[in-house]
Image (cartoon, rainbow, N blue to C red; front, side, top):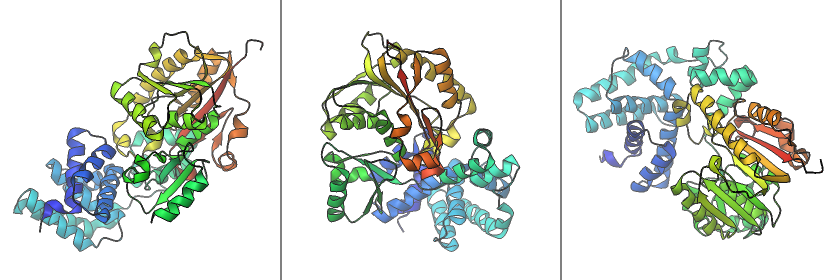
Length: 452
């Protein structure tokens, strides 16, 4: 048996690299799958095993520590046990004997007979004792909830304080589900109806209109949408539905001059350009030179010519140009994208949120002066913390009387968002369980005209 070619061996190797290199799981997994010769079915299994194991990391580690009496384990041995326990607990279709057998074979291949016997013993011990490791989702005890939902305690506390225990539980439950595959139709090439008709004729996977965005499409029965011809040809962009709402609520018009202050990799930037029918001008900034290249690359792929991208920290923007509108998609804790980037749960801290708030305030101060009287300032994040969102907006408005909430914001919100999401004074907070999409905050302010 060629162990190195099995899906579980690739999953183990990926988890080990993720841990050793502190890599981003989505980027690492993409690289690993490209190197493998696995078929599409096995690639889906590797994806499930890697993302699922990382999602449930604290729960799996807690169980392992109980089973081995907190014995120190070699990294790959712990990861093999994590991988196996994940299959026992969360994948119903894989027989227990198959999980044990392949774990033992992997342990022989990576280690020796002694390690394989140890792994076999730990897994069989779990199967005997598994009723001892049932954690109540309705528990009041913080530790129990943390293990039941596989979230760090600080996030459980933060979510519960902000939205109440029941909503917090719904958010965490949603974050442990596989994310939808959503794409945005390039309306410079075709409208959504035409795109869907063409897709259903040429592709075997299902495609349905998004209920959140008029430009969005949900795909199912598909792997990586970036591997299909339509992506390279510029027919669509891979983007979450919540993120698509930003350009829709901005409501840009052809001929406008817009600043996208934190633009890379250019998803929202290119969406704005498509909404503008590729007429006008968008200045796109990002602090990292290599990410500016991504903006240019995406614009070129989509046939967009109005984006001018450059490497610059928006806090150091010193030119005197004023814009019809500014989008500040601010650096944030990213807690809303946990379903797609589960590493965030274990690599972010409460202290980082405070640091990010300061950076967000600096960015807002910098770009506020760049909006023309009567122009738009839109602020968005892919997180749910009130400190980075509602409180950030309240702080800004208290210190900038020249800005007011945009009166047209509610008229632009889709009806299902009005009925489901949390709506404030020209802001919306989408939580992951609302639409099984990214958690997102979007606020729209307008600078008072001079006559006002």
